[in-house]
Image 1 (cartoon, protein in one colour):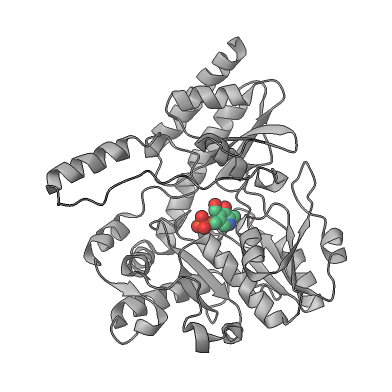
Image 2 (cartoon, rainbow, N blue to C red; image 1 turned 30 degrees about the vertical axis):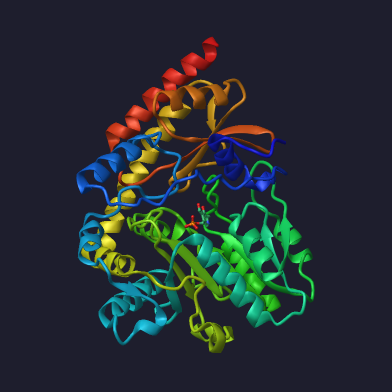
Length: 422
Ligand SMILES: Cc1ncc(COP(=O)(O)O)c(C=O)c1O
């Protein structure tokens, strides 16, 4: 496998993460760039910023490859403009009293949304940091000399990062090649005296598949183990899907046996990028962190006040009702796209639809051609091969509208016609 990869290949590497490609990724080179001796006029600089942003390959509305919400809520954008210079970090309570009160209350609102208003937690920079926090708590509370954490192989790469940083052995459980779910017997069999924790997704980022969180929780409770739920996408959609009458299995802190959960505001939460939530069912778990030397309980330090104020303001402004509407809207877009694409002969869903992350596959259509043709036409979507099956993956966000969804289907139909011709 070549050491250097084009950007597109890198993305596929990420999508195919649980097939564990063995390629090495080189760090992107830094161009030789002089530090400017003199300042340049604002107009000129801003013009150049505009030009650089225009180089981004896809217009946001046509990009269904990204995991992030794209355009965050209107009120969080207004808050961004109000909060220049404000910040939050645990030790700044005396000076940043107001900002920190919004961070604490935003965490409290998420704790009550996700099953335990008495949970402890923090706003983080996102899913990767939150997952690292869970591994740290599992390791510190488990007190094993050679700690092991068991995860389905489908989990986000951040757990591999945490294992490397914290010298934890990751025991990866393989999944069924059709359902992409692990067998609970295999998870149980992997438990050893060194096991400090289990991890599962609600749902996973590749195709939006829910692990059986209740079964993981029962096992963790029975064995006295820490269980972390990665609800990066789920935390900001599953409660509202339940309100709308969708069948949503139990997944949150209300389950006896779930030690912690995380969710990302910058995915389906309508919050700006770099807003995550990490919640521990028992706030006492944070006592296992040696704050005498670290001063803080998180692995990021000072964060922009806009992230705390933006979350607080968006929750207050939209309320549960607003998020329910945004959920109904985005699920309608998902259905428009899924119904449109699967109406094309030869196109099927890789797994049944559940949330807004969907995967398509085909035995007869060259999906790589489809992907390339759509990319040339300005549409972003993920392409990869998982367990030998080619797939196209989409992550659909509430900031898109019906015209974008219909446009995507039309472009997909045209790309399939093109792929059949070549
Ligand atoms: C399921 C899941 N967990 C964690 C993460 C990491 O999130 P972040 O990019 O905010 O660090 C992602 C990102 O896509 C994800 O899909």
